[in-house]
Image (cartoon, rainbow, N blue to C red; front, top):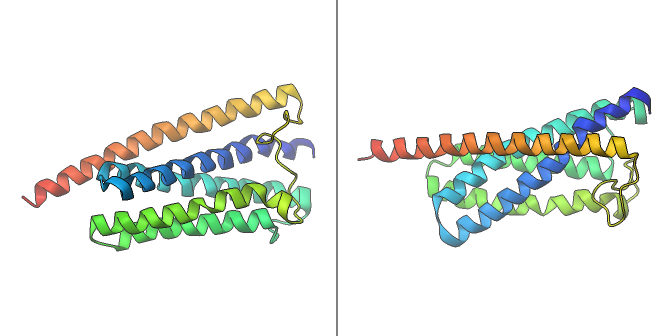
Length: 190
């Protein structure tokens, strides 16, 4: 693949981080539905916003990588289609949060959408095994050892860690902002 293969160092960390971020949305959404504590909703909201960003980066870099590799920017490949569906679900998640005025009702609806959206992640991951697809099988998230050169593997892992650190930082900042907004809103109602 030549130099175009280097897009992998953005594409793979972006989608792996998106998977983790969606797992956080899943756990926080279940916790919110169980406890009705708005802190859990803020964790889910902050992560949901970042999920859209990371999925968007993965789709964009995948398309850029796909053009020279597959000869097209987009194909209705099972993995691409299920990833696009995930992107749309989480865009809907954000839209739902912005249009429902009652914060508790918005949190409940968003939690349900977040949980349903998370169900797409295993479909995306296993799509290359279940259906005929242009994507290669998993290289990192597989039962056997990774099938890539050690130097490439280490570089990829460094980028995955960098993406995860970026997520942690941005999620913490966004959570804090959502907390301050909630405190300001509660003071305004007094």
